[in-house]
Image (tube, rainbow, N blue to C red; front, side):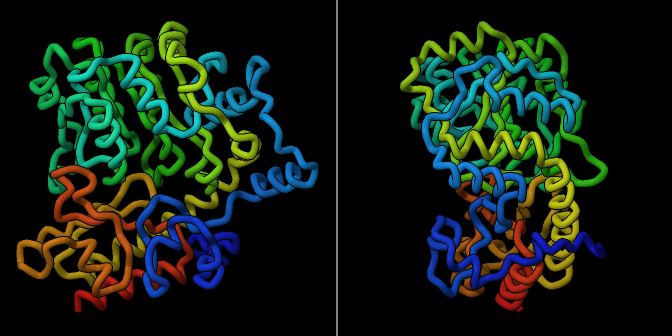
Length: 393
């Protein structure tokens, strides 16, 4: 279809979205269009919807059957990783978790002590910062290069920042909020430094399926045996298939020893999987290839529309074309410098009645920015962009 058009994604409209009870469409007053939290507005994939309907039709809402070896969620993810990323994953090293944040807190507790350093590349998904702070760990800030510099990993800066009490390297690839899909050379340099300085690598790869043409997702654990052996990868089907509320993710451990050490936290601190989350994830990872490909075709055009609107209709705002994700990291520093606003997200909420994420929540290097979620229908996206542009006219 022309321009990536597809009825599944085009059918999303505001009246239907307003009927939803989730956070995205209910946090703000009814005259506000939400483009903030990283949920898509799309219905879950048809295969996921069908699997959940079968589950409800049979009343199958008891405990999920994850006690067999390999458990079916782990097996489904291993097959997905092999097909999509040429990554060979041992299902025995895949632990089912509540979401990607729960194991981050557990890993910090199990593999570091209060006051130990945790490396984070800012600007970054805010829960990385909160988990470090709540765990009484020390932030070792390793900012990406500037917007003008392409948001690249600063490995030389990291080498200077790491000290004897730095224990863990948190990585988000693809990167939220900038949309970078880091190159093999960048990731390899980071991995080699982790080996050199004996850092545990925790890599959030939940955005792996959202790579635009010309790029590729490179799992951190595929960069070599020494790097893989110190890597724990966190991911989920919930972003790609639109069911974040079902609360299920996986942690892939580089070695049995890492997995055993983490599991010593105890069963009741490790969280649990919901049976709908397990059913949805299995369906997604076994039957979802075509859906993801279609959605990415749709998002390619959405990305182009956002980029063009910013360049031609939003004076004082800049956008580096994201290589991945469905997030636009809007550089509004010129608006702040010119005195037109002090906080871009507050300005757009007040003047445009559009809810964006506040860049300052992503760390000090996010101040003057705002994050826009463009995973919605063209009709809704057009309204959002019109409102933003008109507020700046």
